[in-house]
Image 1: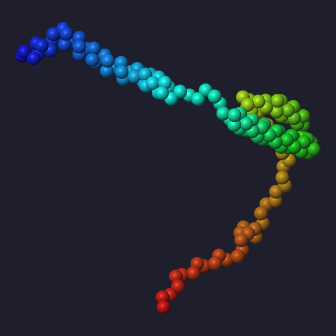
Image 2 (image 1 turned 45 degrees about the vertical axis):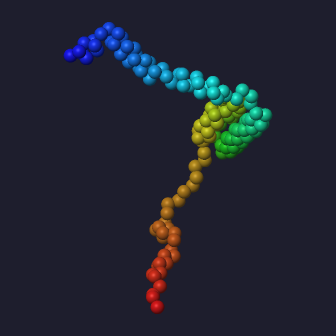
Image 3 (image 1 turned 135 degrees about the horizontal axis):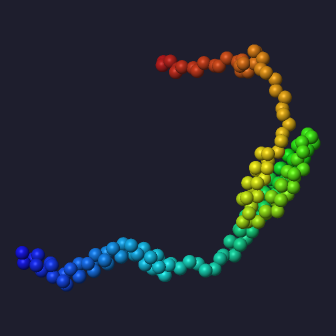
Length: 153
């Protein structure tokens, strides 16, 4: 009984609630202190290496060349469709406008537009013939039988 009376004193209640509040606040906001301490101990490197700029320039040139190659392929398909008699004048202007998006920020959108445009280009129908009855199995050779295990001697 004496223990319960001591636990109900004001200073014990205040100390217990302060301890609970400290545990809750530490769990809630302790990650911020950990991140800040980690940044103080391991700061980010402020200087970019000279090779990083060269690598970035090479990657940009390669991606730009891929986009220009895709534009050439789409333009070739458009000219083939024009030779087959399709009206595709608007498609060439769309392909040229997609090529103007050759910047790092818009390059993926330009590739997507050219690929969608490539799907929309009309194609000439190919001539097909129905298969004859003799064409059911083009492989007329018999399948060789697998050999069994060699006999023991």
